[in-house]
Length: 438
Ligand SMILES: *[C@@H]1O[C@H](CO)[C@@H](O)[C@H](O)[C@H]1NC(C)=O
Ligand SMILES: *[C@@H]1O[C@H](CO)[C@@H](O)[C@H](O)[C@H]1NC(C)=O
Ligand SMILES: *[C@@H]1O[C@H](CO)[C@@H](O)[C@H](O)[C@H]1NC(C)=O
Ligand SMILES: *[C@@H]1O[C@H](CO)[C@@H](O)[C@H](O)[C@H]1NC(C)=O
Ligand SMILES: CC(=O)N[C@H]1CO[C@H](CO)[C@@H](O)[C@@H]1O
Image (cartoon, rainbow, N blue to C red; front, side):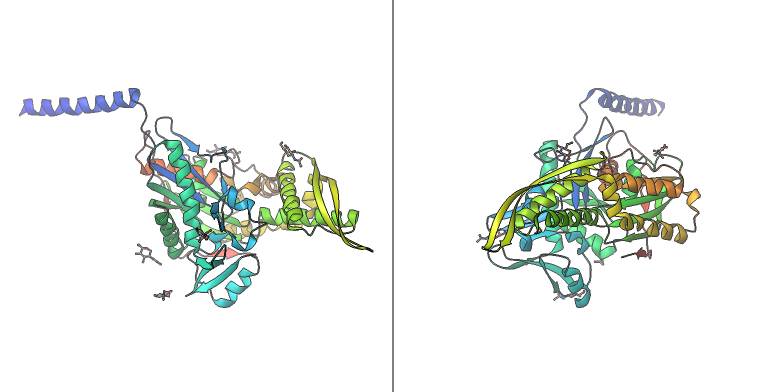
C-alpha cells in the first residue's frame, strides 16, 4: 500500500517536473483562440502569445492593424476592409458600412426609413430586420450578419497567415448594450465565417482588461468609448474579481465622422470662396475628404497642417460650363478644428453625468477612467475629460486597439494559454437600459 502510494507520488512528481521543464524548454504552443473586435467603423484581430503573455494585434497584408468595417459589392466581386473603403465614393450604393448598427435589431418601418436617409445605400425591412439592397450586377439583398461574416472572414485569414495554422475558435466583443438577439446574430455572423465563438464579452470590460484592471485593486471604472460614429460610456463595478456593468449611456450619432464632416464643410466652403464654386465631382469630393481625414489625424499631434489638394472644379462661365484645374492650398490649425467642433465635444459630458447619476456615484469615486476609440486621441477631448474628473484618464494602450487587446486576453484564458491568469470576466448585465442622447 505504502509502495503504491509512493509510486503514485513519483508519477505525479514526474508529471509536474515534465510540465515544468516543458514549459521552460519547449517552444511555446501556438495560439489557438483568436480575439475579435467587430467594430462599427473598424475591426481588428489579436492573439495572446502563450509563453510571453503578450497580446499581438495582427496586421493585414500591409501591416495595418485595423480594417474599415466596409464591404463593397462590384461586378468583379466583393471587396472588404480598406479595398471596400476605397470604393465607397465611386460605388456608394453598393458599399455597405455601419452594418453593426443594424445587426439583430427589430425595426418598425418609420424608424428604419429615418435611419436609411443617412446612408447612400438602400436598406429594406424584411420581417422586422434590416437588409441591404445591392445591385453590382443583378439585384439582391444581404443581411447585416452577412456583412459581418465577410469582415470576420478577412480577419480569420489574417490570423491564419500570422499563426500559420487553421483558426476555428474565437472570443468576440459586443457593445454592453447588445441584447440576446444582437449577440446571437453576431455569433451567427462568426459561424458564417467558419468561426466557433467560445465567449462573447462586453467591449468596456475588454477595454478595462487591456489595462490589467481585472488584476488590480479597483472598484469603479468608467469607460469612455468614442469611435467613428458612436459614443458609449459605461460604468463598471468590480465585484469578486468580476466586472459588472452598473450603468450605460451614450450618443449613437456622435463620433470622428462628425468631426471630419465639420472640417470638410469648412474646407469645401473655403474652396467656394476662393474659386467661386464648391467641389462637385465625385473624385474631387473623395480626394478632399481623404485630405481632410488625414489633416484631422495630424492635428492630434501638430498645431497646424498644410492641406494641398488638386481639384477639377466645374465652373459655369459666360461661354458655358468648363473645367478648371486648381491646386487648393489651405493651412488648418488645431484651434480651428476645436472651434468648428466645440459644441460636439461638449456633448461628451452628458452621458458621463448620466452614468454617474444612475450608478449613484460621485465623480471623485471613479477609480480609473479608460479611454477607448480613435477619437479619444483628440487632445481637446482628453482635456475635457481630465478637467471634469480632476485626474488623468488611462491612455497608455492604443485606444483603437484596447478592446481587441482585452478580447485577446480573454481568448488566451479560454485557450488555456500559459501563463494562466485569473479568468476574471464579467457578470451578465440583465435588464440594464442605455440612455441615449442624440
Ligand atoms: C455579381 O456580384 C457579386 C458580388 O459583387 C459577385 O459575387 C458575383 O460573382 C457577380 N455575378 C456575376 C454573374 O458577375
Ligand atoms: C418573422 O419574425 C418572427 C419573430 O420576429 C418569427 O417568429 C417568424 O418566424 C418570422 N417569419 C419569417 C417568415 O421569417
Ligand atoms: C439565442 O441563442 C440561444 C442559444 O442558441 C437560444 O437559446 C436563445 O433563444 C436565442 N435568443 C434569441 C433572442 O434569439
Ligand atoms: C500628415 O502626417 C504625415 C506623416 O506624419 C505626412 O506624411 C502628411 O504629409 C501629413 N499631412 C498633412 C496634411 O500635413
Ligand atoms: C494615468 C493613469 O491613471 N494610469 C493608470 C492606468 O491603469 C493602471 C492599472 O493598470 C494604473 O496603475 C495607472 O495608474
